[in-house]
Image (cartoon, rainbow over all chains, first blue to last red; front, side, top):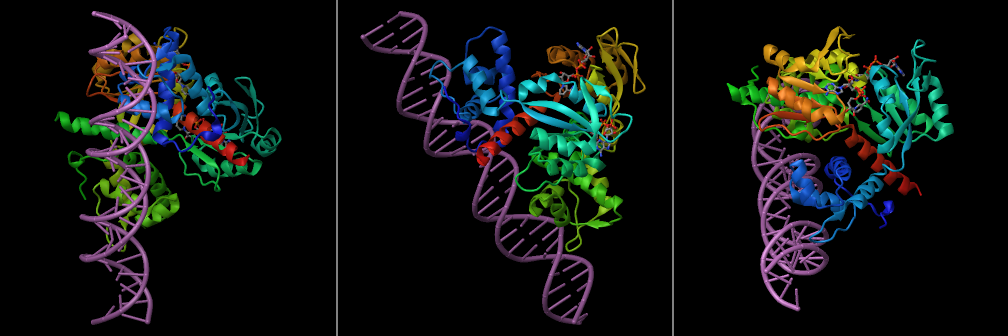
Length: 218
Length: 218
DNA sequence: TTGGAATCGAGAAAGTTTTCTCGATATGCA
DNA sequence: TGCATATCGAGAAAACTTTCTCGATTCCAA
Ligand SMILES: NC(=O)c1ccc[n+]([C@@H]2O[C@H](COP(=O)([O-])OP(=O)(O)OC[C@H]3O[C@@H](n4cnc5c(N)ncnc54)[C@H](O)[C@@H]3O)[C@@H](O)[C@H]2O)c1
Ligand SMILES: NC(=O)c1ccc[n+]([C@@H]2O[C@H](COP(=O)([O-])OP(=O)(O)OC[C@H]3O[C@@H](n4cnc5c(N)ncnc54)[C@H](O)[C@@H]3O)[C@@H](O)[C@H]2O)c1
């Protein structure tokens, strides 16, 4: 089994977003003691279309056996490797507020490709505090830290108004990808990776569907 | 101007998810003192395709004027109304841990269609504590609370292992929509609305792109 | 008043994703 | 051993989304 990262080609964003769901289900199956799994099994458990699951799994390049499916542990490791989740990247956090603290305390990120190694803030009250084992540092130290440690990822959990300037600071230090939790539109130079975590998307979807649902009930 | 919710038909999920982005930009323009806006303006600011913006805006049913665009304040209110963001729905929270506390403290939800009115937990240490002005109640009180207040939304911020049972409890009380932050696959009966907030999607996307990017640089 | 430019609105085209269909293959059972 | 069946893999079809194109409308400036 070799899963060569450089062979990875185009994969639909939609497939990429479903892989973690499969991964989680598969881990549950491992815990339950199973040793093999087919795409049909996965589809059944998750209520998805079996063909879609197969197409997604095929994307990762793993080959299965007809009539059998895949070796469960191999598939799990294959997906980990495909996503890079077995090679955690360092990240710095900007904004050690309530959301930032929750993120700092969330150990599981490490098993999913990322570990927050340092936290930065502008608030003198925050600076010097230890949050989940990491001391909050002044924001102005961020670029040097990133440069010295070659940190690839920056997490933004500051107020929206500060998001763009914090992003610029991260870029100046050599960050390559930004995970943004602030409800702000951030512009990055070409070639940088931006992942917005926008709760308002969900809120819009929830609210809209709830009202549509209301309308039906009348 | 009438924006009749019952007239709302099919709207692509993708469009629905972009509306909050437009909404946020539009608010920025209001703050900057503008009074009219065209789809082309929005597209320019956000780096999107103008036709896509127009299609999305059209979805909401608002009609604009050629050569002029839309009255900015009207468009903002139109989107609010379309999404139901001007009619906040009550929500209960299960799991008052670090993420749950952050959510409880996040006042802005109210301006986006949702307010968390009560929090529930199973931990005796947590129960009775006040978090951001709301007293944490025993989880077993949740169904009665939901029934009495006709609360439409439940937010799950418990560990993944508890997510399904908490969801069942919410459904038993009459919840109609669930916003799930736990990394768990939840099954709800037909007709119920489920919105998963899955950070692992982002993590997968970030991690994968970062590695692809690495490969390029070599 | 008239011509030019910007924009909306709508239909067509292109591209993408999902679903369908079918042949090949491995397994288990008679 | 041979047959029925579950599954993979791959290509085709269908559905959906995004992008293109163009006519109609309105505004602005000459
Ligand atoms: N709390 C939530 O549940 C939640 C949910 C969704 C989105 N968000 C978003 O996440 C962000 C943080 O939310 P929060 O609730 O943690 O807010 P918060 O006020 O608790 O924390 C913000 C932190 O950022 C720090 N900060 C301010 N300016 C900064 C700068 N220029 N550089 C570095 N740090 C700076 C502040 O000192 C503070 O510690 C906000 O943009 C918010 O909209 C929060
Ligand atoms: N902290 C983060 O940044 C983060 C990020 C993404 C996802 N999550 C997910 O959100 C959930 C909560 O995370 P957290 O960091 O706040 O964890 P946490 O341990 O701080 O909080 C969990 C809370 O849920 C309570 N709880 C346990 N079982 C319960 C039950 N059956 N009913 C009601 N409450 C119950 C616990 O007492 C605790 O207060 C987890 O599923 C986690 O995976 C957290």
